Each structure stands twice: as C-alpha cells, then as structure tokens.
Image 1 (cartoon, rainbow, N blue to C red):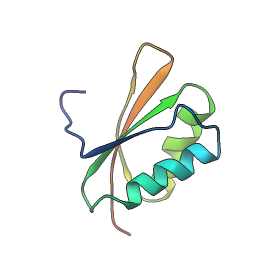
Image 2 (cartoon, rainbow, N blue to C red):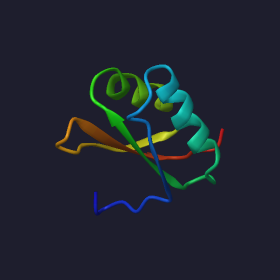
Image 3 (cartoon, helix red, strand yellow):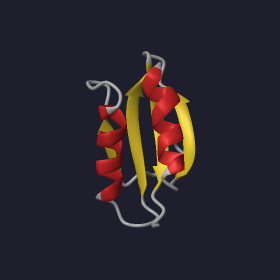
Image 4 (cartoon, rainbow, N blue to C red):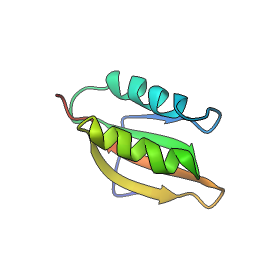
Length: 81
C-alpha cells in the first residue's frame, strides 16, 4: 500500500453487515473532499458489499488489498456530492 498515503483509517472487522457500511460511511463523512480513508474489513460479505456501497455513494475506490490474515484493506478517496 505504499503508493497511497491515507488520512484516516477505520477497522470494521468487529462488526457485521450492514453495520460495516454504516461505520465506513460515518468515517468517510468526517473527512474532507479528496482525503483518503483506509478501511480494514473481513473477507466475505464486507468485501463484497462495502466497496460496492461506497462506490454507489459516489466515492472513488483506489485499491482493495488482501492482508494475508483473512482481512482486506480498502482505500477510498472521498468525493463530495
């Protein structure tokens, strides 16, 4: 992940859908336009649903990277509506 520097991060590995997206959305709302959020999530439903939902909100998905421990890190650039 060295090519991106993120401004904030949120770990949603301790919650289940749909709360995963809610927590990610709240964290994004706290950022300024153009800032990058790193979201750490579990494999399965979160990896399928959170990136799709964030993209539907109009934000830019930069990268989804497997961490090697059953979790993923999603990098998202906030885009103002």
